[in-house]
Length: 140
Image (cartoon, rainbow, N blue to C red; front, top):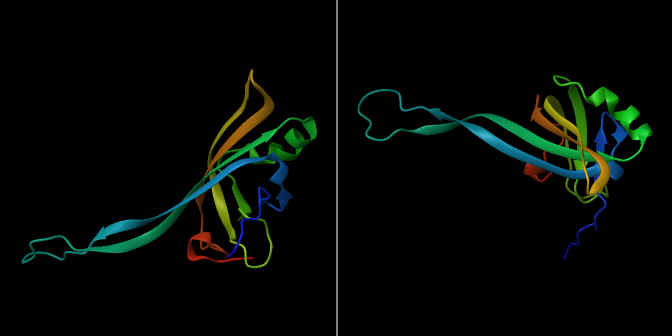
């Protein structure tokens, strides 16, 4: 039986290693619903799959000024970045997602009284066909 690779994800944004800053990464996939009923004589609507879409929420936290400097280029909304994500690391055979994402929203930097790390939350939307699609079971 396969085992999880602990809490050691593989996460690169434009080839920059952000694994130590990672808090969470969530990718959701959807497909457009297209009504293909084609006119009269039908009692029920008929549907087909349209264009596929992916969205992601990436949360990172940092507590040193070097990390803040390194990430400054990612703060700008409307920027396309490449993200390679392996929730179980990058060992051969482990799940992998690699695609370009459009940053549609950046929340933060935020800091709370109970935590010293500064948190950034990115909203992403997939752009183009992924190199690796985790929803298709693709691996490193």
